Image (tube, rainbow, N blue to C red; front, side):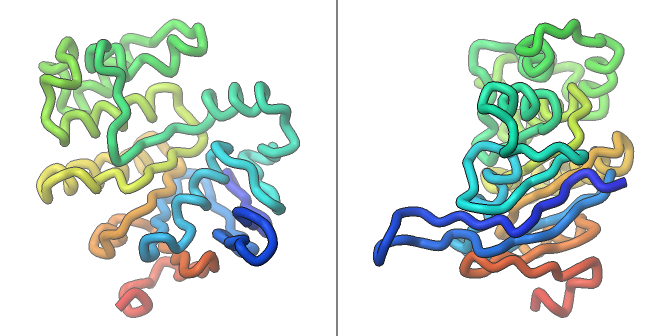
Length: 231
């Protein structure tokens, strides 16, 4: 089942001679429960692509379909609600709310949408994330790995169609990075989420079903057998 379809996506910043083509005619699709990684050097257009897919920025041209619905045909408020309900975001800097506990941070997307949290699901997530004993802790009382696991829980709690992860291990040590990658893999395979991750770390692509490369704004699908192509 196709979840994501990106068609001829372009993004240009500025105009005239000073214009910068950050993304050039990017097209690809993803199936339900697929885990794909986007690699590329700094400034290549990876984050631009992720922001467009997440509806956080508007393209110069092109379309993004999520489960058949085109993001940029929606009015801004409609797209905000659609994004909140159907896309989970995981950021390098965690972006937890400092005044809320682990449990409250995880439940926040539901509360924001005036939904009553399913406490059985919350407890299950806390157990899988290894945060049961930390549920009443504030972010300032957690390690970096625990904060990122909380962010993953927040991205999973509302069963989004798509999870977008922007350098989710960028601020973590190797042990915490491995734990986070295993959790993202579990999100795809256990919860059947579709996961799209940006990473600078080529070694982390081993966890992905498929790898895409962005270079100078151009997208190349390297497929699943990517080891030799990345070297």
